[in-house]
Image 1 (cartoon, rainbow, N blue to C red):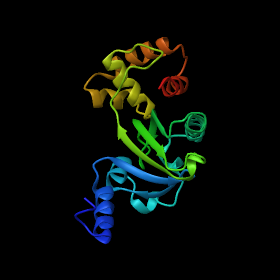
Image 2: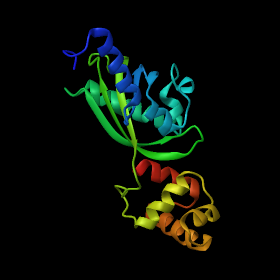
Image 3: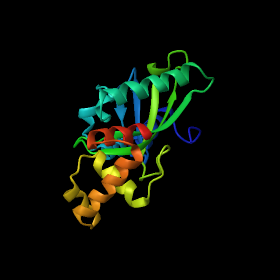
Length: 192
């Protein structure tokens, strides 16, 4: 393409391609968002000015998630020959809706991995948790529980009674070996 375009036109085309890419992307410097594209602002439901120049922590449900995932990513990039990192993690929208996302990052500065990275994100559907085998309905209920919905709200969203939701919640608590909803949410998030 650069053979067909002069340098200025090629740079403008590259910027347009980044901004209009259907893949949610961000360029980060030391875990601060430098620039985002339209797909990323759409995915996370933030305006560009609410993200650029700010910590990527805004996209995580908790400080613990932000710290744990950052440590894991940095360890991988510093202790392997790989410049690429990928995982599934819980993230959140501006409205605090928590969702499961596939995150892929590549460092442009291998000696100092977080100095400059390019990230892409995509929302993933409910999936089987590694440590616990769940039915498709239990996965749906689990994802709504993580987002703080009540049994009545979950029932309304799934078209089932709130009592049926309570049965699924009880099964989830038994499978995860927990005694209350707070512990259940914590276990579900750790299982991912």
